[in-house]
Length: 272
Image 1 (cartoon, helix red, strand yellow):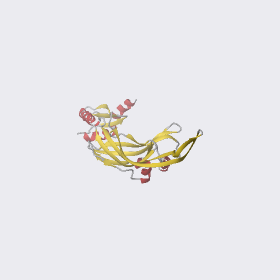
Image 2: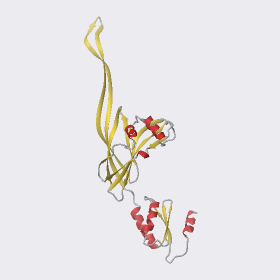
Image 3: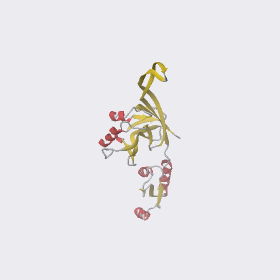
């Protein structure tokens, strides 16, 4: 039925040169963008008609016009390149340890089968501060997204959930999480043919609710963008659009210690 309507759509008066209809599948590129470019690249647009149906280009034109379309698709409809990104986090952390015990004080005397002596209690609280750099590597398709984990648990989860509601990311005023982690969604996009790359980082909360459903909150309005040359290392710091959010989101807790991310550096590499 659709093909029949399509043929009626393109039916028209006979032309001096024969006009034919061909459907071209588009696998990787955006069909709508290609449809906009096709007329611009044509030596003549007389009798040319281009429509998008699903992920196909429906082109009515002459043999010469069809040859131009086929050449364009070979150049434009290619698998997207992959971008490898090394992400380094500078972390400042603090861990606490507690110890309690008894220590002998003076000699121990055994008299008539009884033990006599004195002991004293020993209690200690120790806090250590550490600075370290950790690196994660990811590979994402050009224009697509991949994720990096910030922390296994989220110390300021209640504050971040309430922030999500206040800024319209969720409808509920309260969410009961079963488990949740903080992530960065990383979206690289090669500018033209390269070597410049635009990298977008979106702070994200993702996990499961107590009812078993999955929940993902992407703070798109706080996304940070940076442009780097292929192989260049750039620093982004935090999310400068909201320092209060940044100070609470870039905190993770793992193995009993809490650490804050003080700087983020990115090194993108376009893969062959």
